[in-house]
View 1: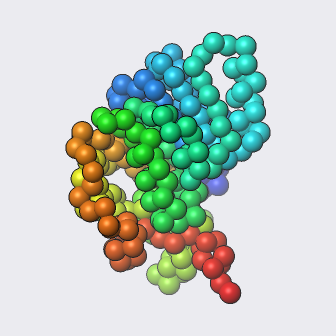
View 2: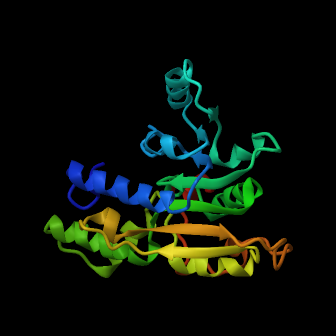
Length: 253
């Protein structure tokens, strides 16, 4: 990956540490039957295969799915791949349930918070009674202006707060404040939300400006408020998440 701040490639050793830290968190969930939404190149999957009983990968890219299928065509692993978008995971068979669902470095590419909530609802329908969801690499809205300032300082540019606001407004990716997930218990009574702050051995934008989340099913049934339409509908947009700029452009008449 290239650094947003410097434009240079992030050192390989730091990317390997990022991968290893992510894998350690997932392994801590003791996964057995895994669903990964956005399997990508298989960076996590190929390292986890020896630890699990089954693995199902979804991806928006037909090319990616075809490549993985070709890798497993002569193997007996319980591994399955589907060419589906994140919000299409309900197209999996009704009896397909998973004790661990991974959404790593994916949700920033969702078009908005309502899409995210829609995907989350469908994920929960695929989770076993005491399963866990790992959502990794969430871009932290609370620190967005800080990373913009770091980039401008690195480039030696003079700027005003208005410049910062303009750049932040034009952000194309979905950013979510940790406070958003702290509100989620108002929607789900059967889930516990654990925000994992990053304190890693290296310091770059992956460790400084992103965080991870584990959602654990607590065995309770139902939700506290099934009529609630979602955090995005009842909370002020202020400070909880952004509206990706390209999504805004798409709504202009």
